[in-house]
Length: 150
Image 1 (spheres, rainbow, N blue to C red):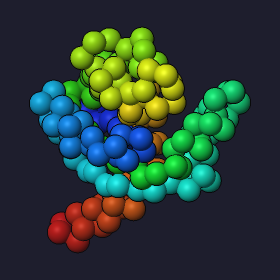
Image 2 (image 1 turned 30 degrees about the vertical axis):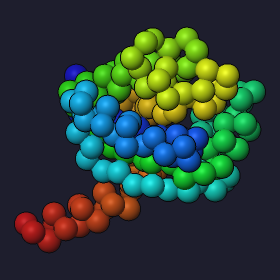
Image 3 (image 1 turned 90 degrees about the vertical axis):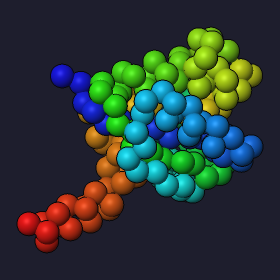
């Protein structure tokens, strides 16, 4: 069975053009719960670590540059079949080819595939790794507090 959580990220160009609130509204209107959210400025090394699965691809260096060019919003979203639902909601990678009504079609730059507005985990395994990358400290603190309460 597919997991209830996924990782989502709003990319720097959307943050810098002040359209985050519109995306948050769309996320909630689509039935996703925003479990955790924070804004983060990635250094190039952080972007390289996060996207290391793409290190052998030609777009890797540009992606890391773009992702460290400004703040991002990192989120943990909840919904049944969260990964699949989120992937369908954001649309295909290329904003110019993304389906009408998807986040990438509406907020992505059709001239620049790297500025496709949002990131979404590809699998439940990726979601767990990506959630830990951005929220590992918060999760560990919550687990500690749970231990204290019980």
